[in-house]
Image 1: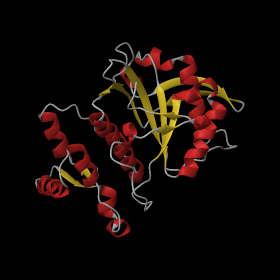
Image 2: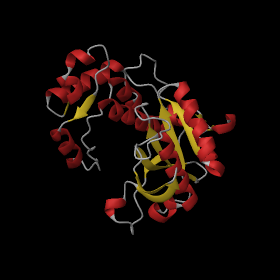
Image 3: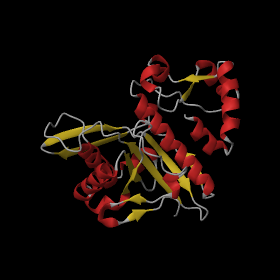
Length: 265
């Protein structure tokens, strides 16, 4: 995470966060991320992000925290943006006085399937037996009126094509088709025991977001209102990030000029 993100999460000043992170770094609990540390010159003009060391993970577990060690990834920028989006749900939920809960899989579901949806569908002349693993979620938001919204998030950095003639290549349209079938087949209920599901995408520019919204309208049909998209730039874009807590506090754009407010039931 970046120091600015930690400030927003903890409600502390920047100087206070820097003082504390320096102590944690000196004691070996956190460090600069491997990518930025090993390629210092390439990342010199961008904010530096922290990651937990093995010692830091051990300390959290010793304190009773249910910490999930992220899978190793060479895609540093994606992993960082994913962490920032996830933190935005925490910050926004707190400001709206709603609670965010990590949702575990249905107890009857094998543990090996607890982090993804299995969905079979037909798309562009090909039969898919798809393992659909969201970047974030499933997570649930509990509102003051005791209702819940369950959601998953896909963080897009424009590294995949929106559409492709190559049926074996990953594309945004394939993901949207897979999620539309998850909604149609109610896989979220069968696998996770969830009563509803909202699918959110973030992407780096308004142009890209508009294209994803159009695809949702074309491909999701009657479920297009269960999709939402927001602009979330990366630290390399030179664009100021949205206000802290944007995932809950700002509207998600939908097909047909509609918006989805996650902060409201």
